[in-house]
Length: 195
Image 1 (cartoon, helix red, strand yellow):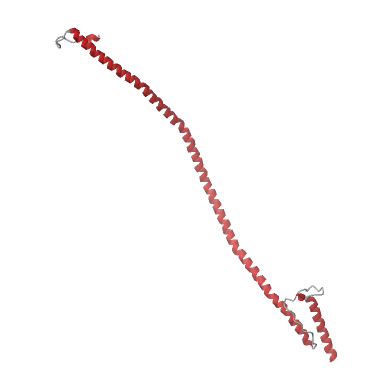
Image 2 (spheres, rainbow, N blue to C red; image 1 turned 90 degrees about the horizontal axis):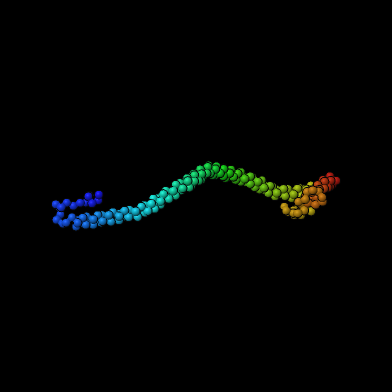
């Protein structure tokens, strides 16, 4: 069948039939050889394509396996964002509470300042009254000498230690008052007897 396909007519060539057949066989051999080479190249290409397809499949499989990991990462990120969103109102409430505490303390400071100022004024008023009380002692002492009897004059200092005790145990201002009262009574008696 192959020979019948590639028969060369005697009209188209001037060579003998055997030579023509030889040339036809040679051409066929080249064609077969070329076809074999093409097939061989294609055969060698097929494993390369198979490896490429296998690599592509592995890449696709890795990407498919990576999708759940990405989903877990996205879910974790969502939970973190959601937690931070819930934390923001808590922080705002903490800041608001802290602001209220600071504001309350700020309002307490003027109240404490007013209390300290009032206490200072009371202490200052009491301190100013102390010299007034000690000025009464020389006045009473000099008042006793006006009854006609001379009493021994002695300097009575405003901060004399013997005039501070008023409990009547024999010292201090209590004893001085009893001495003044006795002097006043004696002066009054001498004044009446002398008349």
